[in-house]
Image 1 (cartoon, rainbow over the protein chains, first blue to last red):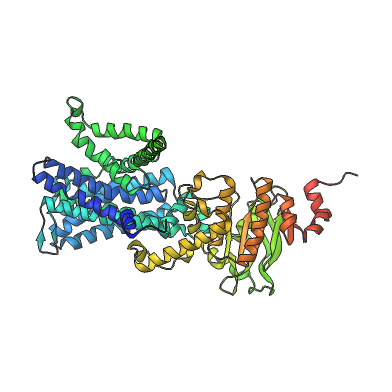
Image 2 (cartoon, helix red, strand yellow):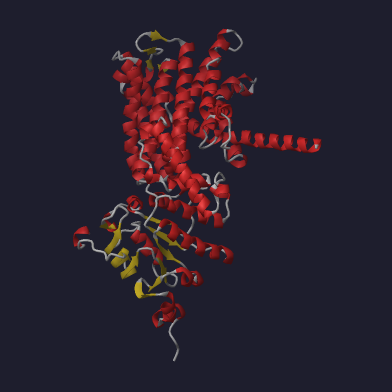
Length: 341
Length: 272
């Protein structure tokens, strides 16, 4: 392994994979404007990216630390409204709006982390769900800031106060942010912190014996999850350009949860695959099918069935399908070599 | 609790002394006024019939339980003697005291080397920010720790398995990984909770050898709870026997074997 040449090492580098992945994604606007794909693809894949970011945060929380949250939607909404309000009503630059939209929910997330020290499993799920519902109700009622039931509009971002983006360039911005978030997640998950979170999930006592402070790392896990979720929400506000209070409900939290279960716990690409399957596939494929496509809430049925299938047959998530295929391919090529000899 | 305790004093050769340690669960006295001390560079055995309170003693020393009474004096890695009762459970390892568990506690989904690296958690100096961006300092640190973990795995004889997942390994290997994990922090005292449980005869012999090697290489003391008397009598310099949380005897293994109180605790009273 140590004798790997530089080229091979670069080829194997996870950073290169992430960047190539981002570059491929950002080709999409060219494809839609070239008429190869429908313009609606841009919105759907953009939404997928936003869901991926929120789900990566939940993956750090549930996948690595083993703590559950059903409050993702509430924090996404909070991020969306804060960013929309800061840029729209207060006239602050987009970058400041995003920063505020991440920092404020993170503080709230840390408070929930404090509560998590006393609760586990279902009870933690219930508490986070309550927080989320309280937030959603607040979005309904706090009309001067949120616009109440009629919702709130936001603009495409203006970078550094100079570059005004349109839908295509905002999409590319989403791709850039996704790649950055993936790299950040990769670092966190594979370093000291990721191991501490893993140890905490594996065994509380062993983690403590090894010097991991449960309080500190639970707070970190919750802060990260809410930070990712609110970033996703803020990006949503500036990409979809409109924020309705009814968007941030329990089904959304469950969609994010099903993304990581279907895609694969503790897998970065798995999270993206999950988002494609759960979010993009129903819109791009299922709704085109005659008769079945007209059923209301079809995507929920689809992801519900998928969860059952994945949990039964692929407990590691859909991402393990690729590993299995790779192994199968290796086996086949090996057999061929043997036959030749 | 701390105001009751006198200034910490240990004799020069001692590394750990527990004094009048008591642990009550409601009316049950799991540990009752227990005292013993462990010397530097010593392999010390704690034995007793089932339910004697051995694991409770361990948990009191490592602060998973806060003792109802008594003190746990420890000569820390940094030098000064401290009463561990005042410390938080996750700070014990920083003092140079580390333990294994009766039911091996590893993260099944992590590779062996990552499991061992969990043991180096406290040794990482770079902050969260530099880790998140993987700045050169954090990168160097991670690399150095990884090399250290490889050396430890090599010492335990399982270096070739380093990238395998812990969950898929046989029990013997998992025990070795847990031992390797304790060695990452360069401890002064290692506490082993039934290290031979579930091992066959050959593995137990290897274990005895490993424990001795660990003591020589890492220059530390070892405290172990064990039911395998052959192992205890073979490797321990001194043995402390307890029964129902009470002190019975503390002596060299051969004397413990002849001790009437210990025989009675294990075998019952002689019928007249």
